[in-house]
Image (cartoon, rainbow, N blue to C red; front, side, top):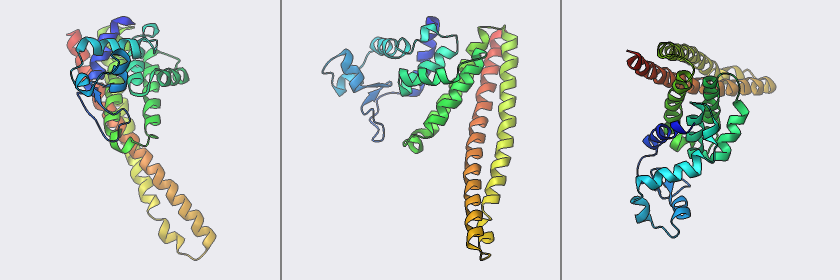
Length: 248
C-alpha cells in the first residue's frame, strides 16, 4: 500500500547510511544505498561527486520507481509491503518477489516472518556474509518486528497488537534459550570424536569422525539461530513498548 512507502523508505535509509565505497561491495560507489550505476540511469554521465551530493528528492524517486513499484509493493498488504521493499533494495525486486511467492500464505504477519527467515537463510550462503552478515542480520531482524507490527495493526486494535508483539518476543526468547543449549550440547558431543576414532578400527573411526563433524555443523547452526532469536526477542519487545505508548 502506497501509504507505507515513506515509512518503509525511512527504515531502509536508516541502514543504508551515507557515501561508501567498500572494497567488498560489488555495488562500488554508493550513497544512501544508491549506486553510481543506478544514478547514471537517471543522470547519464553522473560523477562520484554528484552521487555524494544526490538530493533527497531524487533518492526518493529512485527508490519509488526502481524498487517499490518494480516489486509491486502497492499491491501488497501492510507489513508485507515493507518487508518486500527492503528485500528488493538489498537483492533486487525479482529476488524479493521470488522469495515472497515461496512463502506467501496465512496471516500477513506470518508471511512477513517467513519471508525474513528465508531472506537471512539465503544471505548466509553469500560469499560476503563474513563481511556484512552482522549488519544484514540486525537489519532483517529489526525490520521483521516493525513489519509484523504494521501487519497486526492493520487487522487489530492497539492493545491486541501490543500483546501479540510481546508474545512474539517471549517465543523468540524461549526458542533462543533452547537453541543455545542445543548448540552447546552438540558442540560438546562433536569435540569427543577424536578419542573414539583412536580405537584402531579405520572404518569405525571414519564414521565417528564424520558424525563429529556433523555435530559441529549442527552446533554452529543452532548457535547462529539462537543469536538471531535473541535479537528477535529484543526487537519485538521494543515494538511492543512502542505499541503500548500508542495505546496509552
